[in-house]
Length: 389
Image (cartoon, rainbow, N blue to C red; front, side, top):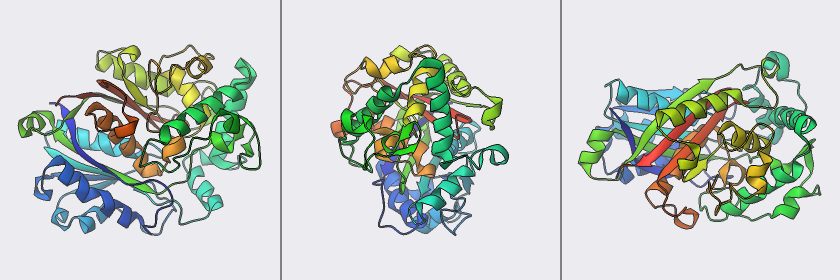
């Protein structure tokens, strides 16, 4: 039994005028049903991805979906949380419900309202996704944790700050063409590569342009049993693979210069999909920090450990390269509302495969990869998507 994405919706990411996660959820839930060409009565289960943990007072958020779509009042609704991979975790819950025969159609929503609190408060909330006993006092919060990774990587393989700037510049250039992106501005390599008043050092060696944005946003999609999806005659983007691999939470128990869990997740997904990395038309990957995208190049098999810089320096991951990575602008430009991110990545990839990506469109896209991770490559999710109709 296969599972397909048959409809979706996506809010504008950024500092939203919508004042709560409830309103963000309402902006996409019903729209996704309409896009899938179904009624609320066709939905057997709802899964909401929301991190919260201090972004707002309202917790117990799964039932907020039925406030947006009252016809879902009595449909089982469950909230899923797995740090920055919360959206993909919600998708996996929906896939599992269909694969188990418990549902035929599932609505998945991911949402987060991050900007209602101050930037320091956001940093404190996000640090709850690290190993608090060892890492909660790291300078700069999660930026400081990824700065430690960058420093260790640079010490071992050489300073790659210019390559990180190229990653940032690439993703911001791509984000110009994404109407949903938080920042639709081409910042250019020179700006991203230099420390300035507008691009200060956040935590050495990471500059502001090396860090993803604090954003509000929501995305939703409908998952459908593939046999039913093909009978319905609408669009259908199938999961050729959907894999999760975890790793230790404490950084002290793992390599500082390689994402081993991510590498295993990619290997498992490509094997399940009977594909190689070169078969993919594009990848939407989790560039919460530019050093993360660099290490993910290595994890997905585009380069040997220590050689990830070559992927960006040689233009492989450019929009016109042999494997465009983050044609949406990624988390770097599109934004990173925690609970929405994984759902957003799948929506962006599905849009590419059915030719609905507008100015972001990668020509002749046939197979797409999605990588979403929670924490510092702790919960690692890889999907391989293909167009079935």
